[in-house]
Image (cartoon, rainbow, N blue to C red; front, side, top):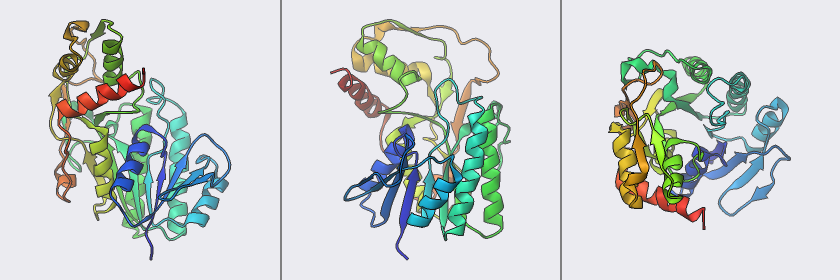
Length: 306
């Protein structure tokens, strides 16, 4: 059977890089990509990828596209991601329902392997280090709870022998096309505009990696036989002040960065990192070091101003 890979949310921050990684991998699979805004099916075909514009919240439209493509693999990157909103948006319920419908339709049409782009927000962050199957799953946000609920649906379908599936739990990333209000983009933009910028998160330690490394880990996960939760992170903590100071050196304007004391906040533990033994066990390793990744990201933001 010919391998047909369908990527949802392919014009989003993560989906865009996943599709790029698939194209770079020279896979012989037939590639399909779903994007928004909503519209008619099959709006564009290129030599290497077939593009479709589909409302994934429309069950009938999803059924139609699954019947047309009959994908063997799905990488499901679509979800509500509006910055500052998605943590507690009621849209999470809609995406949970839609994702279950997508999964079950995929199974009905003969699908073999389903990869969900999950989140470290499915864990109890007070643990500090997240280990699959050991760290408690205790999300503090609606976003995390809905992602976890879908993870449990995946586990049920796996247990029934209906599908091979993994939930790639993404930790922290940076890179091109990230929302400009997030940490690294906001620092890049301020530095490029020669404006002072204050941070109160500098004392925190987090697991950050370049989004291109995340994309290759997702492609590796899709090609593996791993089932269930799989952490997708660097496995190496970095102090946020150190990461931002590196950006300051790259821009040659470290004087513009101001660090304030982090206020006590139960949702922001001092350290949060991924145990990455499962994904590394199938041959994946990050390849972009912090300096090179931040330099490339800074140059990308610089290019958007030219």
